[in-house]
Image 1 (spheres, rainbow, N blue to C red):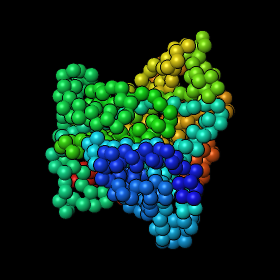
Image 2: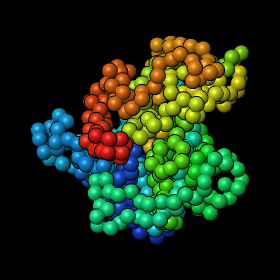
Image 3: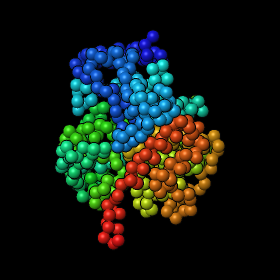
Image 4: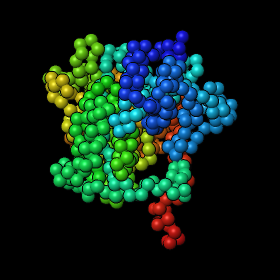
Length: 473
């Protein structure tokens, strides 16, 4: 029995199709990609001749990749007992296995000699690695299916596109992290949705459109956003796992293609560049009944069904803990400002862009959905989508009431969203619903990773401190 069969994976027919495609198209290498705890793609590139072995038996991966913060520094004592996390399997920077998912195979259009597949991480005995976030989302989707629902998600993603002026590749620019590149604006901004601004961006947007659609991603629109060099891409709604996989591939593809054409794309929420606007990731979500095939959020005589209202109640009730996954960077909390088209408190409204959750649709409308506007585009898609689904399902199970719609979002009295990452982590730490959905082991692991990030930030002397105190005192 192959390792793939041990793990309950490996459709022989699909594998045969992939191998035939690789031979037919003379593909030379295959990138085996794994989404880490931060939603960053890592992995190995193998020769096409090694692909059959990888598909059936996986490839090795150093488990220290599970232990790294956003600077790529190892945040756990991996050479101590239990690998610093109480797991024998992680001691001594031991290996686990990446098993490719044959359903994700693609040929990269900007590198047509390259095949590409997403992988899941397993231990040698076939058990999924408990910190693999794709596996965690799969578990939560399974809970939704057991409750009679198919979760649906739609992506609306803002990001910045800059002209690359200096890659900063001198030896002194290396580090953990290294010196960020020097960039220039492509537009001055503040001409929201104007054709003039779009045409200024068209040369690079057309390149991105061509490659994104060639990947098979369901791109719906490309829009000029409010700020300088800021754009938004939207995608058709799909199953939750497919949307998460698409977001992972989309971000990586945009950065790779932009770089090949002399540009820098960033999904950082608020770059430290004068006059820029913060970027958000608005996550559209609904549930489809597995019995009827209909949207379970559709109300009869009201905008939202009881199922949708209770789901919404769960999102609002757990908003603090959810922020730890929806906004996982210190930078992302700079977006939570009143009167800024971003939320600052846990409220909902009907077609209102100032609330945390915007309800869209109409009584009887099959497209009825909830749009969470709290997330940042740097979020790990598996954790963001998974946490929304988990907390929404808890709301249904507990019949949580979301309260009335808020028409004045920055005046309505409500619980404030976390003002920084530490506040979100504190909410996550005490969330029984999060520990039930993700497991206490994962929650504690995630808290340690993110607090290591905060500790590094707090150890730095900022430019603000230098400017404020150096001459004064």
